[in-house]
Length: 190
Ligand code: ITT
Image (cartoon, rainbow, N blue to C red):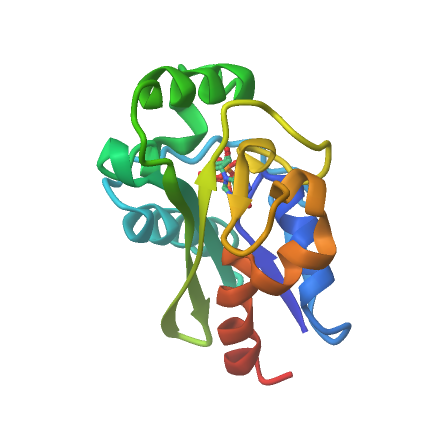
């Protein structure tokens, strides 16, 4: 089956393509030439995932799903959270986003953090929500070149390296989207 993934983030598509069986092929908003920036006006990952999936369903009339994810830091009361993509400013610059995390976290002993994702699936008139979460901690330097976003400053619990050092093999086993994808696969029935 072909499923529309309502995202402009090619890193997410690449991750999901590695996780899904060959019988499910994804097309993204970039693949179908949709350049519209969907306004993520929700105050939670759940709301934004729904906004993105509903937009794609209305515009293209296809079964689809969307993901909204974010990094949540305990000492910052869950920030950047739903604002992860724009934490350092509207230009969505990851260097600025990471610098802001470091500025805000400076002086805190507690570096505990987690990534969280919410998938919202619209399939054959039904709606489904799947969630995934991975625990870890923040470091004050960037390490590694794999992955994307906050991966170079996030060390998952039980490891000594960042997601950007560990790469796909580990992230595809323990990552937040990997966990949510297991539930997605069950519903898609493959
Ligand atoms: P779409 O909305 O088009 O799907 P996006 O990049 O804007 O793409 P989100 O709204 O879900 O995605 O924003 C989440 C941000 O959180 C993203 O830009 C990254 O900075 C960060 N993030 C999400 N998942 C991540 C991951 O697995 N590793 C590192 N950072 C991640």
